[in-house]
Length: 335
Ligand SMILES: NC(=O)c1ccc[n+]([C@@H]2O[C@H](COP(=O)([O-])OP(=O)(O)OC[C@H]3O[C@@H](n4cnc5c(N)ncnc54)[C@H](OP(=O)(O)O)[C@@H]3O)[C@@H](O)[C@H]2O)c1
Image: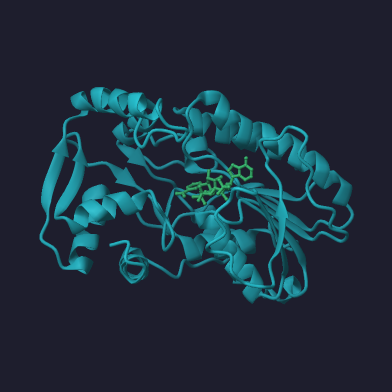
């Protein structure tokens, strides 16, 4: 990794700062000596943001007239806020795309001082690999869910503003690590001795441990960095879900049986959860959008361009990343 001493004393704004990825990013930025301004909502759970050095700004990005805080000399912006689950296509687009226009328009006021903006997108914006092949930055985008389409739309906005602002788009695959609550459900099943398998075919995926993603996000906003605007960032490996389940089972010392769910029963299950969610303000735990996602055989991306351009070597593989993650869940009494 390059020398990051230029970040000491930098003024940094992080959206989605209390979320899984945002909160790990905040920890790293604080340790590098940045003045960290966190954009959160009044309703946000701030349990991971305990440092007294953090400066909070309470802004709901769903408010069409939202204003980012006035931060003279703003150096860097990390846009991590986003919706990974929502009740409708509109909700996804409002937060993952429409917000970006207003955010980057307001960033133009800091054009003279801003040295880097990181727009956190997703592999979902590109869509799954075809015929078992991974995608890379040259692959035509083909998002297949509302989430992926809204993330692509957010990227389009970011790239439009990248003519005037130093914006880089990062597309991670599934991210795991302490504080994560989606894959956590999968690990809970493994702890009970069940390895979830959807359909009969092996489904492949890319992964990245959250600490590596955070290092990549910090590296990519280096003002001396490459001129390319979009990068996939993964840990460089490809896994099957069975391998992930087995690695977790080995680590937790449980013997595991396959819990096979035929694809044909996914629709009724999704409709059941959608109906339940109608009684709640929260989106469904599982819905037909998530179903489209998990039926794909290949959610893999190549990170070679990022590794080469940034001389980047991920510090965690599945074994070491899972060790940290599962130990953390146990320590928190989540597992
Ligand atoms: N986790 C992954 O595997 C993964 C993979 C690829 C890409 N990504 C992308 O990474 C980003 C962060 O994901 P995450 O996993 O950290 O999700 P997360 O834990 O759900 O965090 C999302 C953050 O966005 C904030 N947010 C949502 N709506 C908001 C609004 N109206 N106003 C202000 N803040 C709002 C949330 O605040 P509240 O707590 O107040 O809701 C939270 O801080 C997202 O853009 C996601 O698309 C994630």
